[in-house]
Length: 253
Image 1 (cartoon, rainbow, N blue to C red):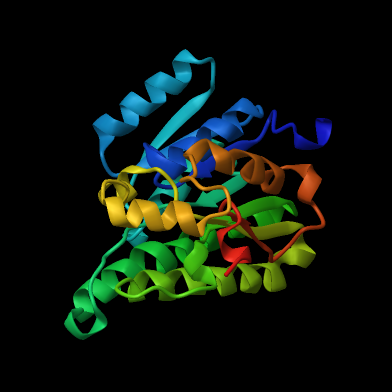
Image 2: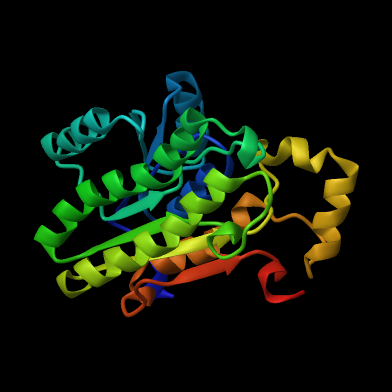
């Protein structure tokens, strides 16, 4: 199990005060990593950090918006100034916007693209600049079922997550020879705050359970195994891949 040990590593997980990001951060911390929680709400970040610290984890916080490039640059400069070496980056921050394309404004389109795709590029670029210098690093981008499949009324999310798949491959192509591995996780329908409205809709809930071989929604902690694998030495020869954690949904008709 030493291959999966993250002791001595520091992981920055964007959008990690709750939801999937929090679940992933907990998993990396359980594997021994020091975790940097990120979000835009300082109170929520402090609460999450206190809860994880109470479990014995080493936790830092970094309050900045991933869509504000200047803030991202400042955050990484702050890491440099405090000798906080980001060994693992998880690009998790994301939003959803459900609306038919014929009614979709360009502003709402751009907001989803900026948060779900462009931010992953900017954060990934800044992390990789340091990783390449050291000759080692792990980047984990969070994709989706919509990295491969489309669904009506979520066009900007679908396009962004499809872009995450190809961004991951581009990162692998450019940084692989420098000792940096970039991979992605594609969650299925997960029981999170962002999906609360869908879960409470009886018809949609029934559809998800019928469509998924596991016959249930996934839980955020069920991403931990894939995240720890992709963050650890166990995946040193895995690069540019998208691993679906979806209860089997994408594999069946």
